[in-house]
Length: 202
Image (cartoon, rainbow, N blue to C red; front, side, top):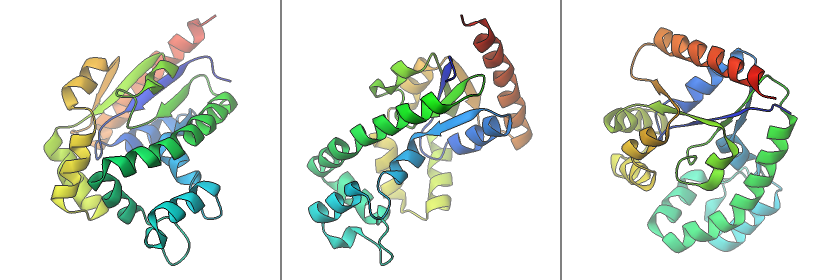
């Protein structure tokens, strides 16, 4: 198990995945909360069966996968539905996260999650890297990527912690409004810093 865990976060559309992929290419073990959240609701899972029973078959696609668009609309329209879903999934995600973090063998581990600032998850991380872009960039990127309506993306952004709070909690910031070569350069700088910190740990 890596002795140093670095958190990586950012709002929707900020480019967390672009940044974490670059750390992965440098040989760092990545544990991604969004990937784990998908894994725990794969077809055949108990969690998916409970979701279908609770919200109805309309929340499943024809191939048995979770209908994420339908579920997203449901939980953003109904706080009690969101609470029910979180009560089901969060313990499963937390257990799988710990399992994966303990299996990472690289000099440090990176835990990627959109909720690191507003949740208790940040307690698992010794440093917090924030991938930062203005809200206008989040909006345009997410609409283009997910083909969502602007109003829905605005609701998602509003449901996440605000940009100022995220930056205030950061140990390190990646400005992701610049070129990909600048992103590579910043990731490389941080990688060298984290290697030094990991080497210094007893």
